[in-house]
Image (tube, rainbow over the protein chains, first blue to last red):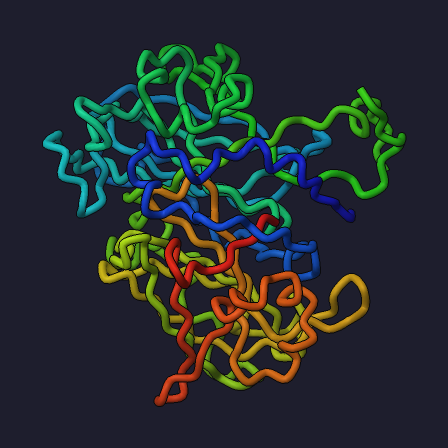
Length: 236
Length: 196
């Protein structure tokens, strides 16, 4: 299937120059981006098969001798293109803090305990219908030094490739109703409230497993539309 | 191909980007954590057809300070200019490198071939790059071209770049034969980044 990648869709992404998030100040390009034509270099991309994912990579609660502490959760959903078609067999990588808000990363100095039974990294391939499913624990909020008394809302990092260089995206999934949203300059870097909501998962009782784990649904929409739409798009 | 009435008309909004943050390494470049790596800076294993090259560089911020928590991804054609070609053992064309605490990265690969542009002209040999780091909310896309390539002058993408900035996309030869491609996120020599 041949895809096109409308430029308008890029408007959903946050501007790199978002000064409320202090780290952007010296890292956001100051000169205008140059419009890149979509050549073969852009419309192709790496393909990852089953060798990229080991058994158990999608269950972050079973990577060590014991079970991690925290609230066990299921995160599942579909990866779709902009026409709503599933993106099958595409790689998803995730990483997150533990239930206490601490990352395994050597440079995380937050004085919350590490959990010997939790690393917080996972991988999965979507199935033929674009579905994926992770089992993990709910990450904790944690402090950071962006401004006085700054705390990140609980989130899981998601990295996806999709069909090409143009569909590559790294993002963060949040949990519904988090009172930290309004104070978080990373979440608020997306200035359109409706677009921001696309990063908030939905509590779903059908995904929830009774007596075992709450379930959250998080659908991800990657760039790409059918190159031969069934109707001409028209003005609204 | 689809008869779903909702397809052509109203696109679903794409999922917006967020920063990779500072703590990605144990998931995305996890060698130091004992994890299996999806890809490394060795894009071409020994024996892959083509001229072996090494590209070295450093990522700098607007103060000229090295960016010590960046991840670089590379994507390229094989020596014959083909993407995802079958039968290329030891070569997918994809690389992923965690920059060091000093902002340095290194790519071991083969020089890619020329690739057709949509208008039928040929693009000079290049790698496509994505730059991710704390403080970068949306992936930065750029390209590495090579000093001394005769095709650079006619390359349709380089032609879109103002002449005085073009040098930021061209890796220079070092005395040891490797190529240098530094990435400046801001400043006088700010690298050209693309809206793709």
